[in-house]
Image 1 (cartoon, rainbow, N blue to C red):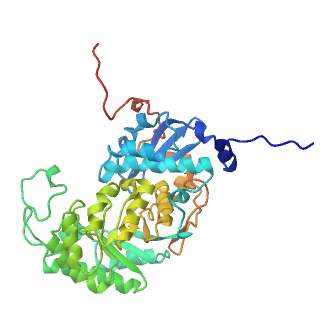
Image 2: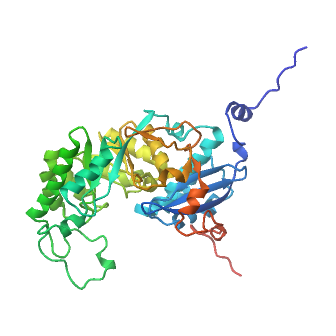
Image 3: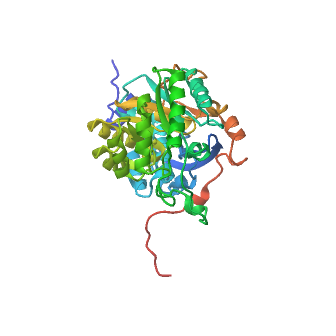
Length: 439
């Protein structure tokens, strides 16, 4: 006589059909800890633990505060991490632009990593699948100590020698401040140092860029283009961000148009959407912006008014992987492509790779760790030859496809002996409202 198999209910059938490392319905978050690693600046790496021994990894934005994530710990304890959208919706109203979005975004990444490990699925699958097996990388290139055209050309050429075909380099305010005759006028005296940060462009001496300043930038970009040739996509960063007025950015941008740059990045303060549109409308060279904007809501005006020619979210600010995918897809409706700003450890980087794989309108994902010798060693699962000819293979391992190399993390902690130290002080409620009762 044949024995019949017992009938399964719907929930049991789903769980038996999926390769799981745990029982998802009974999964609960038990802890969140952080290790702050020093890199190009510093990287606060998030670890979310559960009652079933499985954990997820995320990251607060570069140079951000661990507290931006820890303030949400009281919301996470006891929650099923599979309910990503509910948890994200509870946190999002307490996030903000720039580094203030790092806690919400980093936790979102850690939840997807955790769930990927639970179901044995790579993170890109939660974003609707992938459009490519390998993601194109654009390499960040810091300005050389001595900012001559020759030094810039050699620095960018060294990136091309790595196999990169898309390269960004910095033209920071330091160039104009040190090049003889590059600026006219004088900064206002007797002002407090703290008050100088993030000033309105033109404040104090007004427009300052001279013909010699424009020529200094032109000479550098010309030397770089000649050195690497037309087969390399080039873009520049840091020449604006509050240092120049919109008119100065237009003046400089027009002088650089013969070199066919892929974009000019952040020519004005991040919040000046109208100013970016003014620059974008005046130039034939594309304008990229958005690394400090938070959530789809933060990008909406720039997308709908075509203030950016290239969307440039940093998913450690913009809301994590799924929210960044939503931003890019909305931009695509308006004919705007997306590049991903990325200055982080391999944890955040691989989140960008998964997200980039799922974005149909992707230009490239930034790599800001090319000069850090221990960068790839912070994790396991990242092959030494992870980047080939300027592309990174999208991993098929569960979650982000990485794990921690505790030994290397310990060696590079910002404060020794603090690797994933207890965070019990953050278990108590920190955000939201509560009723005060009579005693």
